[in-house]
Length: 105
Image 1 (spheres, helix red, strand yellow):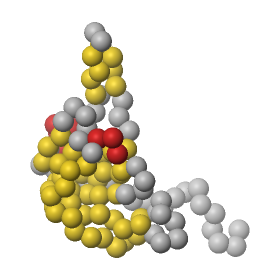
Image 2 (cartoon, helix red, strand yellow):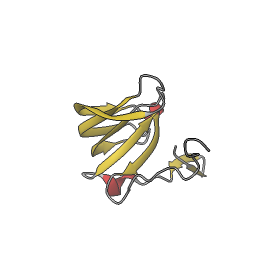
Image 3 (cartoon, rainbow, N blue to C red):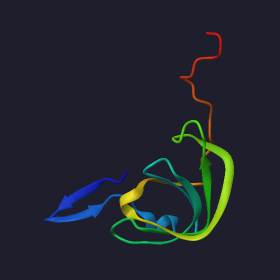
């Protein structure tokens, strides 16, 4: 998801991807796909070029969940219309969901 600031009739993105170039990013796409890779370039439409991209495969039973299984994609272009989230891979950790109920509760 990106946010826009409207100034003088032009649409400018608030998301500054320049600081992520040549760094690892995680990208979530519409439809539940999730990839990580090194951001090599982008444009004003949020089209992203990722190198050494790896896709996290989705669960067979729930296509919105990812599994630990991956597949290497190499150099890819993510279309801006499909990009929902871009986040750095360094400095982020996955935590347990505090809102899930333990089994038997």
